Length: 198
Image (cartoon, rainbow, N blue to C red; front, top):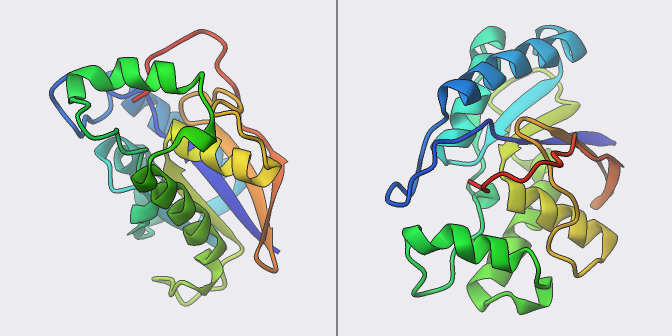
């Protein structure tokens, strides 16, 4: 059995024009606190692999713990945030996401279906991906995004609702991977106050 932990990035800067915003000052603080928490749970990062979405907000959330443990942060490009439909500008994306949360996974475009399938395939193949370490890996931390986490939970539950729950910034959703089967162990901390999805 392999443990996979989906970690949502810290608070990201809001921008209608920047397609890859980084973390806010608060987001950087959250990432530092996360590193301390992870080090308490996995002392020295023994047996832990670090993987991240290519987006700046995910990578910046992972960097403090990667630096603390002196471990490489490996790219996992499949866990990028959901692509917008054709014709939706960056300025319109926030409104589109909020409306999309009230719809169904059955409403995805072909591109979005490929995105969701790619996430599940990537997570199921984590154990077989060559790691940049010679030590045995028992846990993989995957730094990713709100919609990625909800897509995975919906797939495991076979539930068509888009919003399965609202993972807070730097929340940790724990899964187990056993013989190509993903199982939910524990949902991450949920944020009940509304906030923009970045």
